Amino acid sequence: MTHTSAFLFTNESKDFLRTVGLARPDGELYTNQRKKFREVAAMVEQLAIVSMKITKRRTVAFLDCACGKSYVAFALNYILTRKLNRSVQIIGVDKNPQLIHRCIEAQRSLGYENMEFHAASIVDFVLDKKPDVTYCLHACDTATDEAIAKGIVSGSRFIVAVPCCQREVSRKMRRHLLTPLTQFPLIKERLSSLVTDAIRALVLSAAGYKVEVFEFTSSKVTPKNLMLRAEKTRLGDKNALKQYWRLRKLFSIEPKMEEYLVWLRP
Image 1: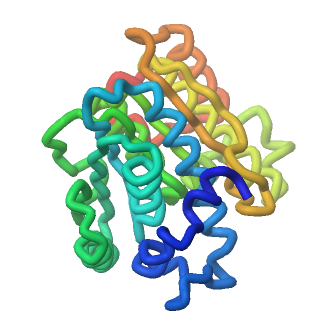
Image 2: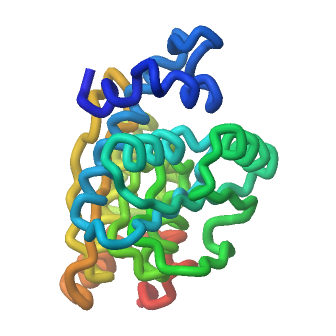
């Protein structure tokens, strides 16, 4: 169990775990939620690391894209405010109004007044203030692209994304030099996932972010364990943009990201 997992699983935290649906009425984790708990703890740990780079003199604003049931948002709020004494504001956005209603009920039950939830698409959601950290955990397919684009456009200092279901490039990947590889469906699926996340990393670099790509937790916890962690450090990287265009041309694709970031277009 990591330090974050230990912080999240105490007698004090059981009320929050029950309220968000990770634990039974007696406070013990549901058997089928144990991997989810470990995944959430690993994500929160990375977000906590990022938040430590932001001054303690002000409130840290987080934007949770495609928040779903907001396990990460609630766990992050608990860890940062109750254990690390940080002042935070967390905004969750998801296009599913039923899930947002559930999140609002949990937020009110827990008395977390520093959280808010909105039913909206990521790209259309209007922010009142610039987020310090924009993140998403397993936002399906192009929802990850929306989250990354929202972070870039809003001027977020940090963007943390764990992609999922990278189908878009796979659908568009038809005529290219590596067709001997992609004639095999499983290899095509894996290659398209790598290409998709390489594209995302290059886009972040081109937008002026320093990007790290790594496994944030064990593949036994989740096979979708690749994380893109980016920090805005410069105006932009023209070489990264050129590499993006080269990758785009190699696979004859037009990534969805170009709809959200028009400066990517050739």
